[in-house]
Image 1 (cartoon, one colour):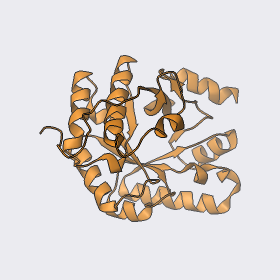
Image 2 (cartoon, helix red, strand yellow; image 1 turned 90 degrees about the vertical axis):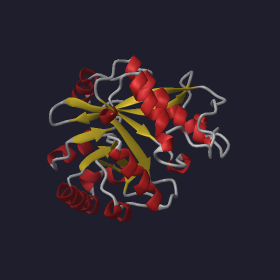
Image 3 (cartoon, rainbow, N blue to C red; image 1 turned 120 degrees about the vertical axis):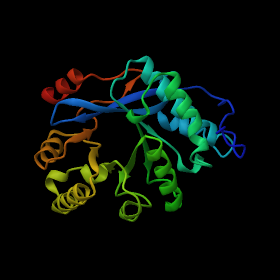
Image 4 (cartoon, helix red, strand yellow; image 1 turned 30 degrees about the vertical axis):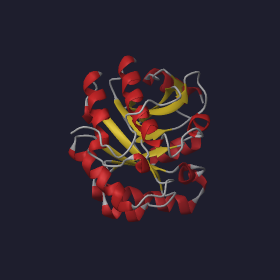
Length: 250
C-alpha cells in the first residue's frame, strides 16, 4: 500500500527537528524498559518552540517526520530497548496508509517494529472510535500501544473500556505528592487492579521526588519515568548506570 493521496504526509517538513530521549525504567529489575523520543529543534530548542510551528498545513508531514526521525536517531545511537513515539491522532488520515513511512523506516534502520511503542495523549480532542481504529491497526501490525497522560484529558476510562492498550501512562498530576494524598492513593490502587485484570502494563510518569518514587515502588508500580530517575538527554540515550546514580544521589 502506498501513502494515501488525501494528505501531505510525504511533503518535506519546512523546518528541521531532532530528538531528546528520556528513559522509562523497570525499577524492579533495575533496567531500562524503553526510551521515549521527545521532539526538539536541531539545536536543542524546546518542544513547545517546535510544536508552535505545527499547523493544519504541515500537521501530517510533522507527524511522519517525527516518527521516522525518532527511529533513525534511536538506531544510530544503538538503542536496544523499546522506543516510545508520540503521535498526533488528528494527523492520521487512514491508519494503515499512514503507517507506511514508519514501516519503511523500521526496515531501513533495522529497528524491530515489536520494540516500537506508539503513545497517544488524551490532550487532543479526537473521536474515540478513530483512536480505537488506529490502535487496532497498529497492534495488528506488531506495534505496542500506550495511552499517555491517563486520567487527564478527553478520554480515560471510556477509552479504556473500548480498547485495551499494552500500556497506560499515569498522568503526572496523579503522581504529584501521591504519598500524602489518600484520594490519589485510592485511585492508583483502583487503576492497578483494573490493569491487572485487563493485562495492561501501568507506568508512572512525572516522578520527581524520592517520596513519590518510594511510595509508588512500595505499591508495586514497576515502571517509572521522570526527572527523579533521569531528565531527557538531547541526542543521547541514558544508561541504567546514569539512572541508578541519580536515584542513589538524591
